[in-house]
Image: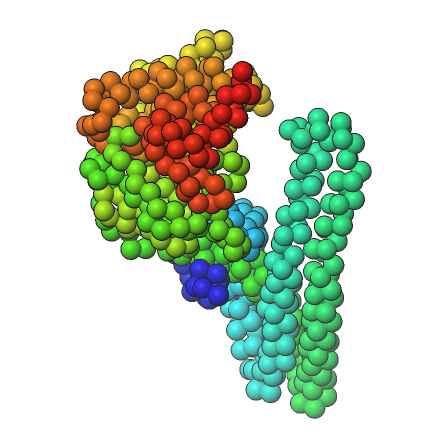
Length: 603
């Protein structure tokens, strides 16, 4: 397995998460930690006050009785007061660190250069667990503080026991099996949960299908509701069965460890009372301290178990995501050109999606000239969209390389490269913002630039969509929001196309089936206007535009494709033809055959 597949070691990962919390709220973290320790001390001294009280009463020493009574009162009041202050401080700290951690995880996910992690089942399971745990990862800090408090109580209690007889320190040693089983048990259970992660995701997916609105019509028409319920139950049982077995096995060992400690505690009381024939105050101290010891050990091992099973594992997954995101940009030190001079070359590029050996692209060699409009055609599954994804650096080629003006694309920082890209895709996202932001996010620096948004809407032919909305560009999209409205698929697609036209003069403009929901006549008119505008920027069609920008069009409609300067034909993952429409028609090859079939269908 590669380093990106492995979770980082537990303790360094937790240390990194702690530093993340310190950066979010350094003062609050320090105060919360100090209060957690201070709140632990009064409680640990209760056994001492009981011993002094017994000694004072039995010995007729009034001063000792008063001292013990005051100590008991101060310990009780101090424990309550410090706990209240500590809880409120910790709550404030958790509020701040929760936002910081959630924002950090969201940023990490968005900053990963490629989307390969969305294709690997093991990564998906890991990310799903991290998404579930990030909302409680803030508890890790509180759990660590509480654990330190329990350890402080244990130290004081053991010291009190040793003051009676050194052999009583063995009680702490006998407690070690409970600590070991508590730290081991959650890890075993979490490992079982992660092994069944895909079944758990399937169960959740089936639940969403059965209970959410988008699939509601088809669920009812096809009458598959009962089948979905049965499949979900089966998937859940495939996940829960191994988890339950792991829990049962670990519970047996955990119970045995506690039985050993219980027997040792009873033996310690008998030893002090019978063998040592100690004073009543000493026996009372052993009874009180021993009973507190079991509570402290229970609290400590419980917190350690939570740290090991949830929050420590959560910090490991967080550290893994940090490392994975950083690894995707490693070695990216080449600048992105201000304009294209030589163009873009694919040199013997092959690609297979993660987890498969089937090549979606096989030994592709191409040159995309600067300033050209390039169309990519082929049957479904020929690799058209995959080629576009590689160019957008959403994946890295399995073999071969992509060169931009002679420099390997993999050497360019992904963010810098994508800042010079623009695009509209068939599987677009429905950003449920106000219309001007739904379009404006296509170029964040001009998010609120009203003229730029209007110009992009006009270029995409989406002015009619905006005109039909009551508040125009200020209309809230999405029916689940106050005053929000829903759009048809075609209207959403027009706004997605407008978003792709927001960025002016990109080095690469990708149009991947961006108008599939529109009729052929509307698509043709739209791209005719676009092509005419592009060519006005270069009066001589043989010469590139000033910035050398390349437009890549993926479409099944040959009436649109024929407007391109250069057409790439993919078949069975390979490039089989390339050239102008006229040249390809003259060859009478695969492109000409597809063109004639589609033209006949329209006639």
